[in-house]
Image 1 (cartoon, rainbow, N blue to C red):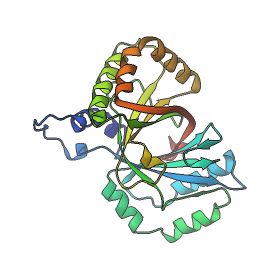
Image 2: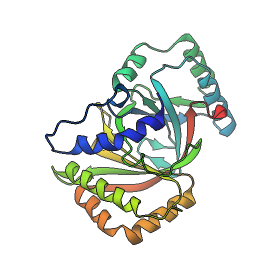
Image 3: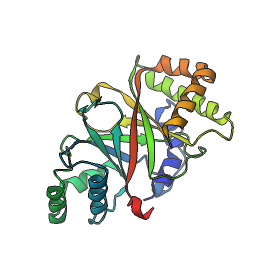
Image 4: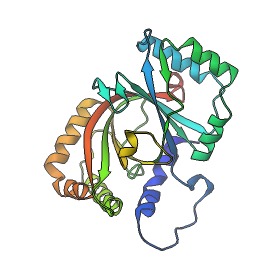
Length: 266
């Protein structure tokens, strides 16, 4: 299933899901039944970890018989020495058609080919699949943003906790206002997309201490710097709405890379 198609439809799903409205939603097609399910694994670089060996590891992973419910994967390398996962950690992110499909894939266990691949590259990178974290991933502006597919980008993460019981409803209102703010930006704004990740499953600490994660995606760090500066100057009213909803930490920048589909074939 195509990542871009799914991300385009979830703006509607996010706003409906956060609303208290009792109106019946419109009937959707089978492809539009819900947001993609995303999992993060915390990974530890080994003694042989470098750009070349990591690229080889990912390239050989793409040669395996991957589950058909998996439609996108990425890697994230924090710029700071320590992140929520600990010092020196990096992250492997998976996008699935649904949580049920992901659970079924993990339950089936690793194939002999996968086990051999993991053993071959354990000096490059090992990932904690047992304590992986699950989220519903929403992209509330992807139907109108100017994001183009890239195999490398940067991610600026914010870790957020609701201020009170109506924090989610206030977040919905803030998202609507933020989308209007984006509507009013000039056409020459650097490529940008944002995602909101809501817990789906029993995620471990310290991640479970946060109610949601807001991810800003840019092509490069210069674009991120410009975007944050513009919002500081022009988005004070929207920021006040976000502040009324939740208290957030960040931004926490990472360099991000497409793992699947195979970036060599992109």
